[in-house]
Structure formats: C-alpha cells, structure tokens
Picture 1: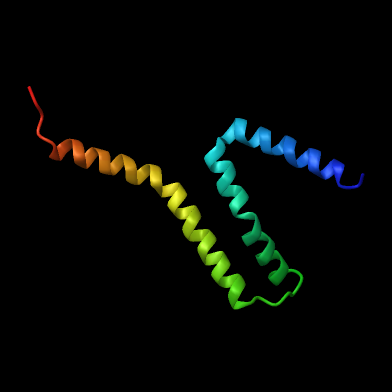
Picture 2: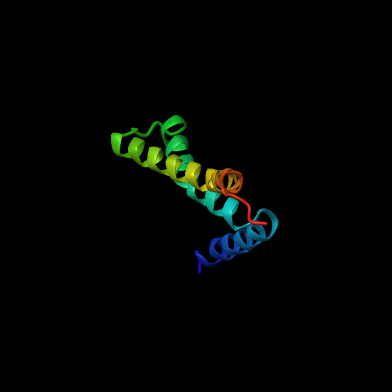
Length: 89
C-alpha cells in the first residue's frame, strides 16, 4: 500500500508533463533523472563517484543531445536538399 501513492502521483505527473510539454521533452527530462540522482548523491550525500557512473552520465548526455538536435538536423538537411535538387517545371 505504501507504494501506491507515489506510483499514482508519478503517473499523474507523467501524463500532465506529456500534455503540457510534449512527449519528447518529457522523455528527455526522464532520461536526466539518473544523472540528477548521481550528482545529488555525490555532492550532497558524499557517495563515491565511479568511472562507470561517469560513463553512464556521458552516454545519457550524448543520447539526450541527439534527441534534442535530431529535429534541428533534419530541418537543416531538408533545407539543403531542397536547395540542391533541381526543380522541375
């Protein structure tokens, strides 16, 4: 019973986040949760920061960057392709 309340709150906030900021940004913020947890653990609680955690954070940041930049890259590429393609009359 103790886990029901946090689960319900988590699901409600997830639905609200998707409605308000969209699925992509919600997933980006969700992917950043482990990074936040590791940083808080190391800085506030004095937990040891390991090389594995460092690599994990690096991979998460790369993935989030690719997710965020994908739309921009696609728009730029489509603009370049439109300029390169010959137009048929």
